[in-house]
Length: 340
Image 1 (cartoon, rainbow, N blue to C red):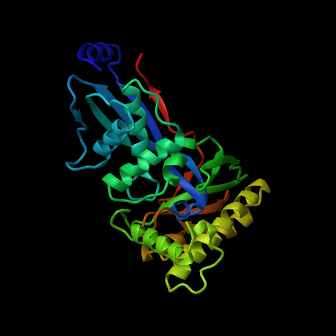
Image 2 (tube, helix red, strand yellow):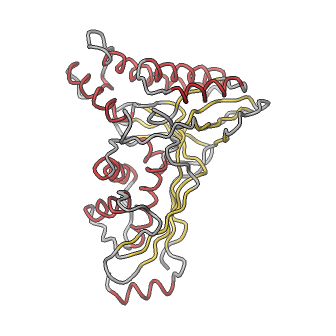
Image 3 (cartoon, rainbow, N blue to C red):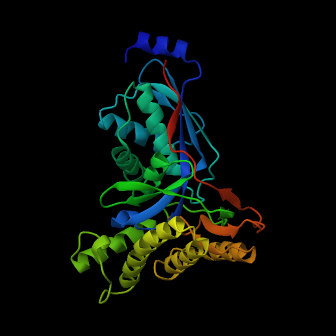
């Protein structure tokens, strides 16, 4: 894009290009995405808004971000590698997602940046699966967190009032009505901040990779059991197998309007994540206990683990514990304003 075009665009769009990407709650299906498994997330109303204003030259600035933050340069690099000529611009970022709480603020940031910067370049963004992979590369190769595709796809595919069942092997998805009747889903921050790159998340991925190799499998999606594997690999395999089963059981519970069955699945998922996958910490267990004392029918750790938030299902009459935030399924990532 040459200089006159930039100046002309800026004069017509003084408020810039804006894109929004929501955070996500994963109803069930944790640590299955990078094992080619199943998951059942939904986008939430909170998220990240990115505003891009074009400027002369090739420089890209993001005032307000700390020096060395990898997400803007990483996203720009990956978009340009994908053939999207990101122009010089100034980027502003606003978020009402708490960082480190397990609501996927980093994936929402990457998705919002990708949509806004693609529009600034006058290009269509890649389709959802391709864009999710691009954003995942930003997190793994630039930020050092080897995430799967769950967070990015949940942000991109969100629909109001619906979760989405995602098959990570086939990369296909189906919406699932998230009709809980008079019940409420809420998240409660455990107070234990976490960084995926600094936690045991990458270690768990490595353990699953080693387990698959020892079983002679491409991924743990094909595992039938972990018998004979050294521990803790056998426990990691057991979690992945049973968590995949819980995803389809949760879909069935939603279709049958059976919140009691869904609550039981949340409890079973937490027990598996705590005991077999070992991603809980004392602060998370205290948050789970607080939810149960407030009347939660079921609760579990959510996200990569080692801190972050817990998800709980409450009857309508229950008083949520202090600090808990109700969550519901909202629309997915989108442009809010574009070049005219």
